[in-house]
Length: 110
Image (cartoon, rainbow, N blue to C red; front, side):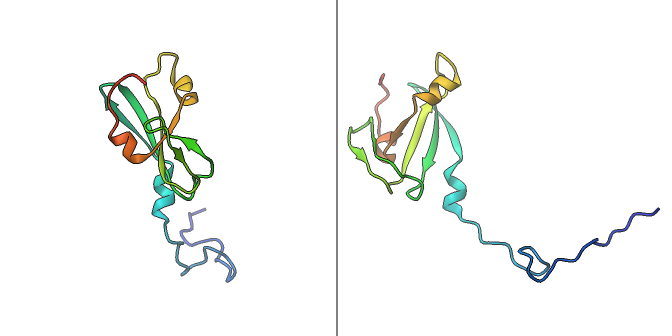
């Protein structure tokens, strides 16, 4: 039997993705939130992930300035990408940094 190229079902009027309906608008802040990047520095390789203000729900202490990172404050989550005991150990030792503290840190052992 020859293949049919026409759709088998038509979208119902109540369907979320019916024909002619527009796709929901992309939230760029939410899309960028989970993307981790690798940074190389004299103090090692680091995995850095952005935490948006919307997703920051707990109190943390920044290791750069020893000040609190309050809920609702955008910041960075950083862990070692070259941990001696492996990736899981590096992830378990992740720390939350202020953006400015991370970019202005000195490259010394922490």
